[in-house]
Each structure stands twice: as C-alpha cells, then as structure tokens.
Length: 384
Image 1 (spheres, helix red, strand yellow):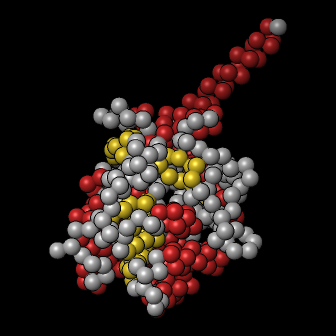
Image 2 (image 1 turned 90 degrees about the vertical axis):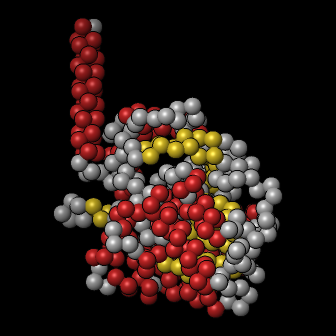
C-alpha cells in the first residue's frame, strides 16, 4: 500500500512539475513571439468591462449559415491590446436595429473584418463608411470562420430588407478555406456550419452528421474547457498554433521556421472555383443592385507581396480573373476594389499588435479608401 501511495505521489509531483515547465516555456515563447498565436490570457489583462459576459457567450452556431451572434445582447471582447463591448440587434447583427431600414441602405457581407473584430462601434469600417457616404450600412459580418457560402446563405435569408446595393468583404486569407470540407473534416466535425458539397452542386450546403447546434461557445464540457484554457493558461498559444498547422493555415519549412500561405497566391483551383461560384450566386440574388467587392490583404499577404519579385502574379489567378469578369454582367454593375493596390508606407500599423485584425487605424484606412472609391466611381446613390 505504501508503494502505491508513493507512486501516486511521485506521479502527481511529475505532473505538476511538467505542467509548470510547460506553462513557463509557453510564457517565454509567447513573450518572444515564437508561436503563431502569442496572446496574453484574459486572466492577466486588466479590464474595466467586467460587467458583461465574454463574447464566447454571444457567438452562436444554430442558424443554417453557422457562425452568428446572440440577438439583443452586449458582450465583452478583450485581448492584451484591446478591451471593448459588442452589441447585437434583434436579429443578431452587430448594428443598430433593422426595424426601419431606408431603401438607400447598403448590405455588407463579410467575416470578422466586416464585423469589426476588436474595435468599438465608432471605429468599425462599416460605421465609418456610413458616416462618409451618408448611407445606412447593414452589417452582416461575423467572426468564427464565416466564408462565402455562409455569406450566400445569410444574404438569401435577409435580402428582402430594403437596400440599394451590396458591399462584399473578401478576405483571401481564410475565405478560400472557411467552407472547404477537406480542410475541416480533420479538424472539427462538431461545428454546425455549411461546407461546399463534395458531390453535385457545391452550393448545396453539406453539414457533418455529428454537428452540434450551439447557443454559445461555452456550454458543454468541451466548450467550457476550451474557454478556461484559453483564458487562463499561456500554453493555450501552443495548442492554438498547432491547430493552425493542422488547418493548413501555416506550414513549417525545412529550417523550422513558419511560413503562412498567402491565399492571394496559394489557393487550389477547387477552392477558387467554389469561392467564385458562391459569389456569383450572391450576384444573382442581387440581380438589379450594384455590388462592390473589396479584397482585403492580411498581414502575411502584404509580406508576400512585398517580398515576391512576381508580386502581381496573383492577378492572373482564376479567382481574380473571374471576379473581374463579373464586371461584364448586363443586369447589374459590379466593381472590384483590391486594397493591396492602396497600401500605406507602414502597413503594419493597419493591424493590432496582438491580433491579425484591423486596428482602429486599419478600419479608418479601409473605410476612407472604400468611400472615396464609391464616390469617384459614382457606384451608389450617395446622400449629399
């Protein structure tokens, strides 16, 4: 009996020491920016917004388009470089109420960049475009891997709202993979979200049979455990970095350094075809309305662009050429705005230091370019 108790004691000592070593190493690696994700756990982030629940309680997956928001809620979103509150209207959009929408409104589709990840309402690109143009912009952006198939589904659901045109935020950094069944089947088959169908019409959504409808991202043992680890332990950065490798968002090359693919350049032909099919279907739904595609470079896309001697070769890709072919549609006017063509001298200032999303400066930069483009091209009927 004594030997058994001694073995148990030694086991727990080794376990505790191993955990402390892992946590210490993860802390050091995070501070040295050695992981792909180098975030400070929320436990160590000073906050003034503690009266609101964490945004994980406000993110849902119960609609046919998957990722969305709890309606009529206010939630806190924080990292080491921002601490904000996010509020959602009666249908779960990060916007004011849609109960009395003017017919001159613009419909905004996109992912977390459209949602305004990490910035307050007054710093969101959608809000700034609205201010610049004097038009109401209906924000249907959502974080949580929200790709073109999901944007098609949500537009199909709400396209009866009065609006004169559509703005689509296209983020090559993940829009090619967000609804890619092959990418996600090895990662997580429990998320209730649509994927391009592998057989027949790819726009007929495929859902994993064991997908779980979620009212939030905290309920259940696995969800609570993920949020607990992410919010309290430095080694969560190692786990999340490993997940990025599994998703193919990053690759390790022979000298043990990380290379993040730039999907401006690296998307497969199938990924390019599916993306453009989904956006063509959006155009069909918006058959008589002007549409603006805004192509958004992430930090790694900008790095690749600046270092590649053939930096403009992505413009020969099928996805890019197909987008520009949409300009020839007879039923509507379609314009393409590639923000890569408007980079500032210090593009690193466009993004948060602790996160890959636009900072307030990045949102302002994008909003000003988009607003100026709309005015110069006389794309929508602008209020004066």
